[in-house]
Image 1 (cartoon, each protein chain N blue to C red):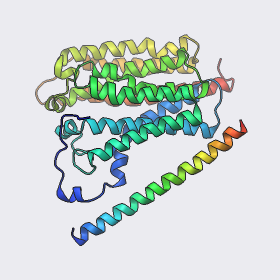
Image 2 (spheres, each protein chain N blue to C red; image 1 turned 90 degrees about the horizontal axis):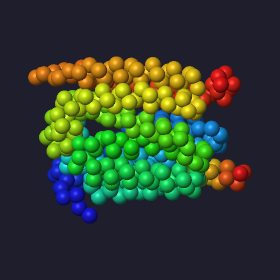
Image 3 (cartoon, each protein chain N blue to C red; image 1 turned 45 degrees about the horizontal axis):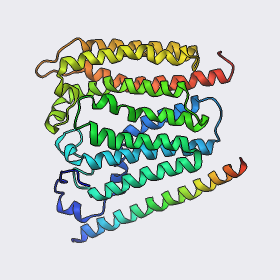
Image 4 (cartoon, each protein chain N blue to C red; image 1 turned 180 degrees about the horizontal axis):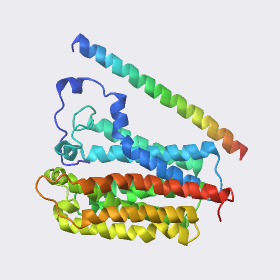
Length: 41
Length: 313
């Protein structure tokens, strides 16, 4: 693997981790909101 | 399970690198998702009753995730066919930017999660219809009908017709005639919409061995059927007005929009293409059919909003 490939791989891994983390955070907030709404019912 | 095909060899550099998240996003067919989200939202907004904004948002999210998951499974199964067609050859799977097994797992995960979220947060009837729509598209249409019959689009069109019904059921919790009519409108809209496209990309389908109507039954038969389905759309599109599910704003707009649809189908249905044909009437009908569906469902929401405000009966 060339240094350019390694750099590209690390860039992709970082962006994937960020997107995955953001998605998980989004679902945590969403399920919290759903729970609050359902308790209110 | 095997699809009986092999994924085209990817460039060495593409195989060594992990897939970019944008490639996973592209697998969900974001262009199609826009129409799915819009019609699902319209079904939700037009339904009688109310839904908490958070639950409504979750319902639309689940519809989008389910449609996205089904689209991923569709591309996982058809990677070899996509590689043969100019229109789809640069998708993430044919180019090797994503491994086939990763796409399959992503599609199953997204589909399963969408049904669970819909069931837990919104309701299990809406979740059951969502599950049926995913199986309908990914299995019945993609794996079974599409490679076997030129009627694939007619029957498979049902897959895209579910979102407004699911949006409606998310609010009301039951299936009545109105969501069935919304389903039927998209069901009968799909063949003329898709065959208009198939007419100007006929060679692509022919090369890929897909029995699309223009390839199997010929152009003449396809063109006649486009007129027939477009004519059927006229009474069907105004039927929500007749049964009292929508008011005059919707009824008059639906009639005008669908008559225009029918008028545009006539030059497509009554002509024959020649060598080097630019296929302008077909491209015009295809473009209008997309605008038509957005406008028809948009005006339904406007109509129901006006009724809720007491502006119309």
